[in-house]
Length: 179
Image: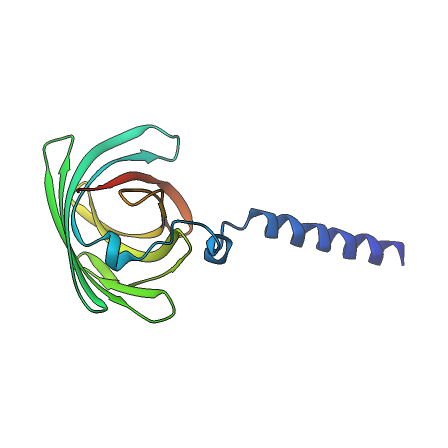
């Protein structure tokens, strides 16, 4: 009986420990202000400043992005031009769709399948698989992307990149909406 109680207690402790490791949930931000509406924030021209850090925290690459967003009702286009610190350039055009309950979907040429996300309060979280060129090959990496609206002009973004459940690194960005 003591062994059964010990095993039950250990299993319960392990379950609580795993639950404590769970990341934020979009519902955690429901009451946060200002309220983020992607159609409003990603409408017009924005500048972004970012970096990629590897698993050890070493800065691997810095970049800037000029973004142009346009919306027609619940359908949006986000045209992004990336300029990397090593002199390379990249273009990504997101095609976004907003649903009434705050969910969004998105596609881009280098996104495998469809990005899915949800906005609540001042936060937006979405997940997607990106075809990322690495040393002459292409890796399909998972992104868990979080954006937090700070005020009408500034939004902060952090995205964890992983492959096969192994954390590869993190992308950190600040967006600034032009007046």
